[in-house]
Image (cartoon, rainbow, N blue to C red; front, side):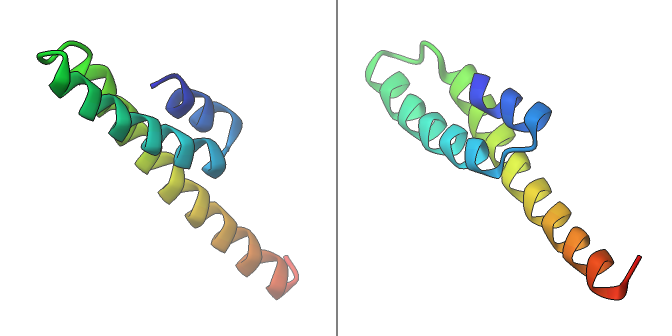
Length: 70
């Protein structure tokens, strides 16, 4: 979850990928522990996914604007 929040604040698609991976691993671990930490793992997955999508959209927009000369 922390990596997902940092990815949103610092524009980090790389942090989004790390948040997604850690969220999935945390979700698997929470199943072994009986559900403890499941919410934080899911929020890490969601925030990581948002980071990745937002990063890709911003990169595409940036390339589109600079290629047209604006």
